[in-house]
Every structure is written in C-alpha cells, then in structure tokens.
Length: 253
Image 1 (tube, one colour):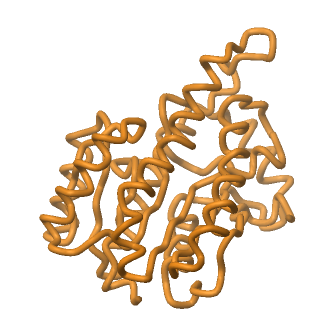
Image 2: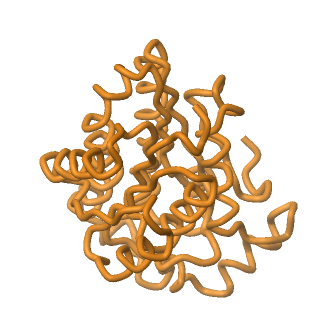
Image 3: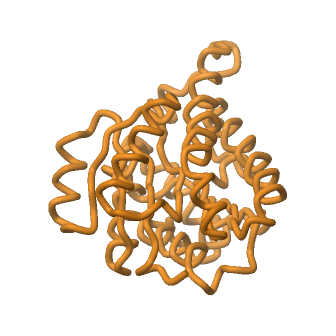
C-alpha cells in the first residue's frame, strides 16, 4: 500500500518527534491522526496546519477504552480503517542528566510509569486497530525505541529499561502478525536534537555524542521520521521484527 493510501495513527504527535512524524506522513499524502494527551492547543494547531487529511484526537494511550474510542472517531472522520501505527508517546519523562534518579533513589513506580506508557500504550493501540488490519491483510506497526539501552550515555534507568522491553514486544508481535500481512518494526534514535524531552539535556552530553559518532552530529527528529516512512512504504514490505538504530553510527548493531 502506497503511503498516500494509508491512514496513520501517531501517538504523542503534538510535539517533538511526533510532530515531525505527522508532518512527514502528511507530506506524503497519508491521512494522519495526531494523538495527544494534554497538549490540545499544539495538536489542534498542527492539525489545522496540515489540513483536511489530519485530525487531532485526545486519548491517554494507557487506557484501552480511550484508545478504542479515538480509533473509532478517526475511522468515522476518514471513512477508512487505520492501516499504520507509530507508537511514539512518551509519558512524563525528560532527558535531564541532573535530575535523573540514581539506583538508590529509584522506586518500582518509576519503572511502572514508563512500562505503562511504552508497553501498555503500544499494546492498546495495536489491539484497537488489529481486527481491521487483519481484514485488510495489511498493517504497518512502527515502535519508537532508543539506542540508550545499548549505549547509556546517561543512565536513564526506567526509560531505557522500558524501551529494551519494547524490542521483545516488537519481535513477538512480528512473529504472530506476519501471517496477516502486518509488519512490526522498531526504530531507535538516541538523544535527539531537539525535542521537548531533550531540551533539558546539557550541551556536554550532546558534545559527547557528537565526538563519539562517525557522522559527527546529533540525529534530528526529522531524520528519524524519514525512517518511519521507509518502514511504512512498499520499500519496507519485506522487513519485520527489526530494530533499526538511527543515530549516525554511534551504536553499530
């Protein structure tokens, strides 16, 4: 299915990486669902900018009922099922090396919050769209990971552990859903320059990344969004169960 024929749900799409994902798919002619949790003004402004082929819809991705309601609203608006999901939402986390808790300070609640946003959120979005994808015999599921669990420039414990678990979810879903024409992949940038979550990242951390990276630069949200287009496009039709690291060569997997 060509990108212009796809209807794409992007979770956490009102800002940062999600905003760039929405712009990238809209530019290719896709229908775009801009999911947001709290950032209503940003989401609606983005939707208005992108035009009739975009809609901003609120849902807490951790709550299955809200996700199902959002999916039904999107289907009614576009008169077509959702073909493509980008699980991007990030729940209450900033990449701040100064305020990050160390091992002695962490609680299970810190980990649980990230697991709920990353794993439960992805599961809810997939389950809400799965019947339609099976009926179509087509689906593209793209999970947003991180290279930080392979190269923890800063020990963001709870965030990186949840993203490491997302690799397992990605590969298990790929194994089960391939028979229905559904691919499931993950793409992992590092600390990106710049998102709302990374705006508190110190210049020193970015300098470490630049000096350690073969391309000598920090990856941007738009560069990550380009890879999502590849996974969703016909060019990516034979790829599933993969974690593609998009970080200028910092991690060579």
